[in-house]
Length: 130
Image 1 (tube, helix red, strand yellow):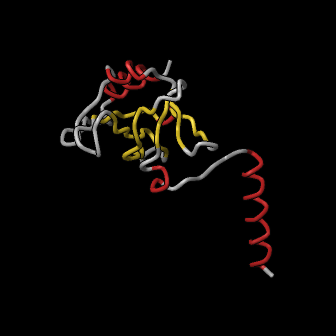
Image 2 (cartoon, one colour):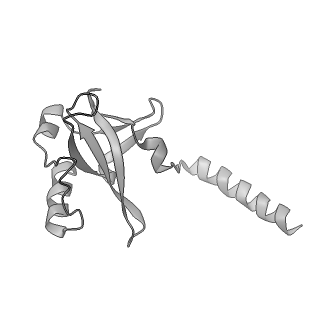
């Protein structure tokens, strides 16, 4: 009896979450997803997701852009709150022009910045979030 009550509550919670529009995705399902801007230009692909374990939330999506077949990609830490899920096209959108992204603070795969540094964090967030 106890299991059926718990299952009913879980089913009810899942239905309520769907109605509220919440979404849970595994990091593996979004790795490799395209990121496009509002002009429908492909900016790159999500390569990784950075978690803030102290706060229990996603801080950045690492965007790989500009390379060919994974070679020569430049990486960008995109604040998670700057990305919008485009469910219809199974991708994310970022409100930035392709030329502005090329000038954004980036890094290469062998030299990641200290993403926990508060001054680096402020500079990156102010670049993407207006």
